[in-house]
Length: 347
Ligand code: PEP
Ligand code: MN
Image (cartoon, rainbow, N blue to C red; front, side):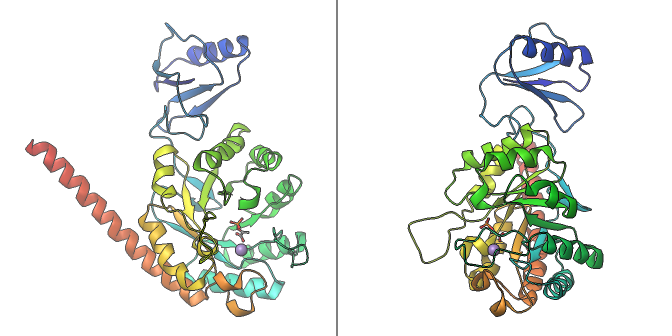
């Protein structure tokens, strides 16, 4: 059950609810409603009758009670990655190569991504490759180059952890831990990421339902790490014309269901560099809080995912166009808001 308390509810009410839950053998958690009030999530049901400051009790709710908007419609939707705000306004762009190829290549790509206007640098040190014979990434050496690139450009970095034992190591170097599509349901990895304070980028499994994806986010939140950003990166459909099918329905739907920020990955979502620009803009139009895009100074020579990798000039164009599109969408929604207010007045 989810119990919402008013901002001025006495501490004794929270304590009484937590004690009742513990007494009934139920796990419970408190979280913020985004307005100074507290929400208590309980795995099970306890009586809160007569306690002062209880404003709502939801006995039926979605199974992902921490990731859900239920009980706290105005929950905070911002995750800080280094100094960059993800959610709640200006869309962020995470850009860089699929894989860290060498120190020189990464530093050059990082500088170019920065010049193109990217906010966060991406690049894999540990790579989940379909073939065991393909380049698997530079491991910790790659993480050191990422840290150097951050030093040089000031951009925070996001990079993947593939195993529970990678989490602490990656968190030592990176500002955000990526959990890849193939690992979305790696529960030991999710739990370990939940024990870290480092923000997590949780990519959707390419065969995962939206509910499974939000349940994976719940694993991280339930361990105490509230800083989860979701990433729609395409699902597998019957059609092999594109590598994956970017499910843009997921963006506004997840925004209805959850307060967690959502970004879109048009690189993996299409697998084709000619489609990346349009689908990036479509992601923003669908309401995404940002994008993650594979970009490289020389995409044809990229060691991983070259066919979906764009040039840094194309990245710059997407970022500029994306900013204009976002401003237009904002103006449009303010206009809609005004029109709605006027309609109410006229009624
Ligand atoms: C990546 O970002 O390079 C990657 C491997 O992504 P995904 O897990 O979405 O396939
Ligand atoms: Mn890739």
